[in-house]
Length: 549
Image (tube, rainbow, N blue to C red):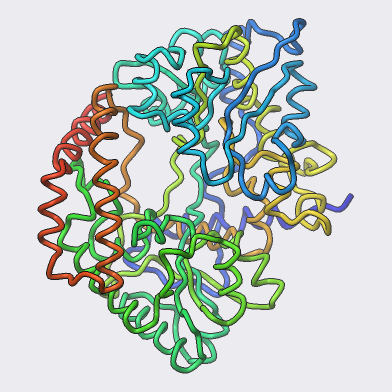
């Protein structure tokens, strides 16, 4: 079986970027070839967790279990996985987990795209699955779910039955803070990064079009306007910039990862400036952002149908057909399409207003992933075993099964590191974006290897380099995962439900020119009347408590 030997050289090449970044300031131009190295020493083992677990005497639950145990498991399924499998129990990862642990899993998947709605219906029905992933979706948060008798308090169970997870928490203070409430309760088990993960979403531009027009990669917002205008007028691009589905531009009128918004000195949604919490959509800079987006929309530079453009396949088709030349996306998602069509591309950086300025907000995959958290419901008859089963994914062997799959099939070990085989990377029957669900498990509560274990990072040599270059941008405005009390969580959910609906409606109308931007001050006043300042105050109190932990 052939090996993807470029993995090691990629990691070595990626590292120099961050080494160089420490001495750089301001906006950087993308290099034609990056001389750089990994963000940290990437290794597919968990030595800190394993040694600590051994010192603690290991797990009192031993696998395989001797009794017949089947857990029901609520878990979202991606569109790519759903078209290949009836449920994730058919994946190599969960087949191997059953073989090793003896625990059977009966998955319950909501229809693709209906996870949040179906989650609420599932909770309201009262017949909760044994294990519930995306558990932070609970209205009011995990602490409220414990208070309501839906989730178990795992504060005593985790130290006893999750030695791998406990060791990872003990080894990193940010991980410790972000995996418990302010009073020390643990209501779920979160995905934890093995090392800092590269920023995997950012601006991508067709370099053949830049060369054809004699343009440099855009740095400022005005550079972007000039580039997109020339794409339209000289190359016939129907929609020069197509927003990706990532960041939900279609639903909100701005990208949650900060693309373009952060050029105006603000963050996306809630952010921090020093130790002060702010809300981007009410800042003066947000009006400037809307003014520019309205300009793009009126001049035909922004997809006129963006509110309805929620289908990734349609976006990729537009980018491949010559209708568009720029987007914001994971290059690993874009690569299979553009590579097939021989379309060269490279990254820009998040734009600024003036050259030499620096942005402070970007897509950041923190050490703890809030979306991939599993709770144990109060219906579970074997909570100790459930905690131990989840803990397996945080140990040395388990993390390989989840991140890389089955040794000898989807990966082999070279120089002490896992290297994907052609079964994962060049499978004529299974595209990479499907393979990451069939042969490994791309999203789960586990010890994550992030971009290094994402097979899409290796579609072209430059993909991991692009992600590493984006990571050199400052992210000091990004908030950590904050814990709210049950009462605070309920208050935020109640207020933000109406605030989000109103804000999204107004922002899209501002961009499309349906409502004049003269109404921006009235829009801000309405948000304040709806309680946004109260929510900011709750977030501020949570940040203060986080800093004091």
